[in-house]
Image (cartoon, rainbow, N blue to C red):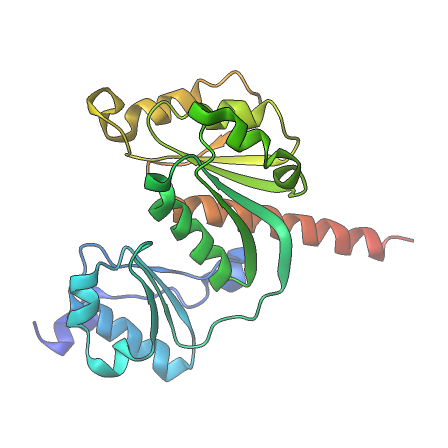
Length: 233
C-alpha cells in the first residue's frame, strides 16, 4: 500500500477534544500497521499524545521500532499510550468494578482510557455476586465515588445489585464472558438494559472505552457546573 493511498484513507479529527472534551482515540482493530504508523507520524509532527485501543500484540510488534519505543503498551487491555500523556488531574471520582477476573481486559480498557485523559480510577476486581461478601466488603469504598463503572458478563447481576445499593452515577458494561447461553455478551447486555435498578447507563458489549468516555463527559459536566456556580453572585 503506497504512502499516498494511506494518506487518502486517514482523516484524523484533531479538533475533537476542543469540541466535546474527549480527544479522538485510534481504534486499531481492522487497521494495518502501515495505517497506524501514518497516524502516529502525524501525532509526532504535532507533538501530541494518542490513545490506541484494540491494539493486539501482533499489530503492535509490526509497527516501526521508532513508534513501538514511544508506546506504553498494555497487552491485557490492548491499549497503548503514544507520546506525551496528561498528568493526573482527577482522583477519587471513578470506581471501576469488575465482576470477575475474566472481565478485567474490558475493565482495564476503561481504566487506561481514563488515565490517558488525566483521570485516575480506583480499580476493584473479582467482586461478582456469586460470592456476594466480596462485594459487600468493598461497598463503602465504592460509595465514595460519584461515578461507578460496573463491568460484568454472564448474567451481569453485578449491575443491578450495585444499582440498588449506591447513589453514584452508574455506567454498565456487559462483557462477552460466559458459556453458551451468555451468547457472547447478549445476555449480559439484555440483563443490564432490563434492570429494575433505575438510572443505569448501559454501553455496548466489551466497550470499556465507551464507558470511560461516558465517565469523562460526566466529570466534565460536574466541573462545568461547579465553575458556573462559582461565577454566580
